[in-house]
Length: 460
RNA sequence: GGCCGGAUGGCAGAGUGGUCAUGCAGCGGACUGCAACUCCGUCAACGCCGGUUCGAUUCCGACUCCGGCCUCCA
Image 1 (tube, rainbow, N blue to C red):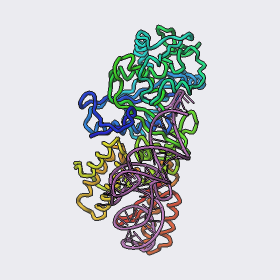
Image 2: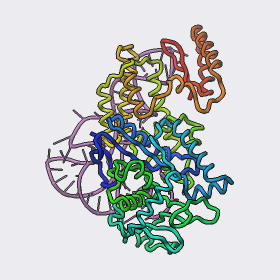
Image 3: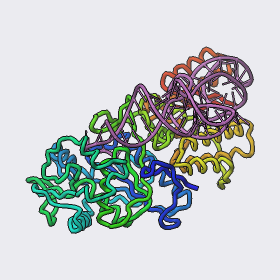
Image 4: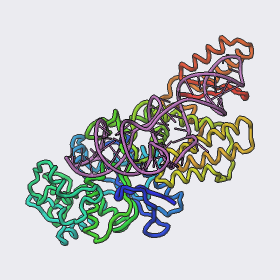
């Protein structure tokens, strides 16, 4: 039985989809004006893992994740770069897809763009205006009337009057109420814009997700996810708009992943303390990032540091070392390890426990290998299958262990030559020369492993 | 100020009302020419104060500290 932590109730709940066997999931994607940072990576990987496990559990999943390609920051950045917003967003979407595939994600079933849903957005705002849930202010912008939505604040346990007490001074006096938010924004001179009943302009940030999710998955669907910083105001506002426009409940399970921190502070664009995925990939295999993310439960905060990456790397190496040179059976036999894996993942996607099952499997496989036991290929197959469910261990172990992203200096041929010389030295009992060669290679980042079968090596 | 979450062994990170997380590091041993890899063994923790209980790290309450959101941000 799959249990899911629902932000709405603050509890783990049994997962029951609206339509038996089928699941609709909408996840808020990125605003594409810059490269993805590690925080984006975490959100993308978290929901990829969630999607994989929902499918593994036998559900027919429709996974939709939007792309926000119209926004103030896009307009600003494009102007700075002296390019059109469209050229900027297309570049960034391409970069995001590349990053994501490197990180081992499967792409969502559908990635709708805001600009492709302009008519649906305008239609939804019209409905809200007609029903009295929205109004046009004196500046031309159209606002949502938060007071009219009785349940406003239910996702974040906030009361409208409490929020007003602590609200900052609002310059936009065109609002009836400081908590009201923009649905349609009038275009300034020269800005990208669309025609609407309220004049030329562009959609506010929240309405696009309501329009796209409603059009892709219907007015009422199962799961809506996103990063921790979207809980408020974005998701709160989405609920208000969608429920008022569609006249039905919006989402049954709200899911939010935890933040990535740097030096105990949230990694965010506004703080400027972010690392892009591309930065990290210059020094680490992308699977190391994935392993780091999966080592924590998706809701827990993760501390990002050089040390946490190194630990993830060491853990992955242990797994790949176990698989190295090991034959797999064609057929996968689910043993108690699979059962434990499934139990862990059914408990709100507990990947750290799932990983611990993998490590237990690694130990048993290592023992089986050492004694050349018959069940080694069976264990290796199970390890490989379970890891694949998390998007891990998909690379050739030999390749993973022998190639560093840094790819510094010494070639494979040179390494092999030195190893051959060392083997001869060892035969001659010339251990001084043997150790000298090993030290020399070690300085180049090469670790030697002697075994009965001979000497192999890995690159750090 | 309001709301939400957290405090676990040297570090990372799960979990449970009463014998095991797991990984890294440490210690002892096996393997090795010596190492590395691997295996076996081992050490070690539950912020603080009360309460419930035969028994609490786990449940309840107070306290302290930390983080997030309340403004664009995955």
